[in-house]
Length: 144
Image (cartoon, rainbow, N blue to C red; front, side, top):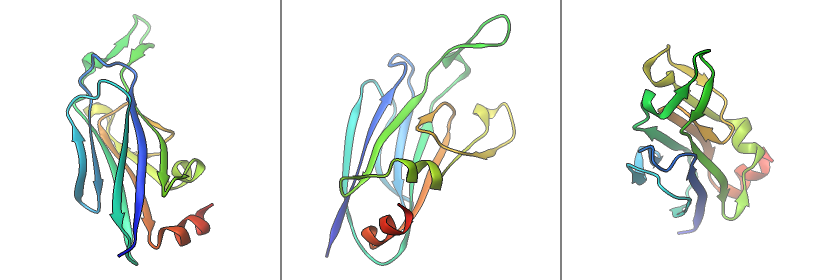
């Protein structure tokens, strides 16, 4: 069976904040951490088939203590997770990730759930989803 590789970099803006992250593919856990403390490069080898798939990044453990707000209600500092260099078989997704992914969250329980754009940073507990299909090279060609 043919395989392809999914790779990405994970980092945090505040290593003291116990922000966690899970990575899922088609409801199957690929990786999980309860506390991102340092930049990490992850790679996963996936068997290729002819099917639709969903890659998900799930941020967890964020609390109001991880966001500092001044007396004028301006955010002074905020703990966030950064997902960068997402690539399929060493081909960086770049703009494809921005165009095709969604970020579902509810502002850590303070507002209604929304489906937002994802620009590389997760500041709220929630899920970034990217739907794609295989064969991966055909999907890449159709979306570049």
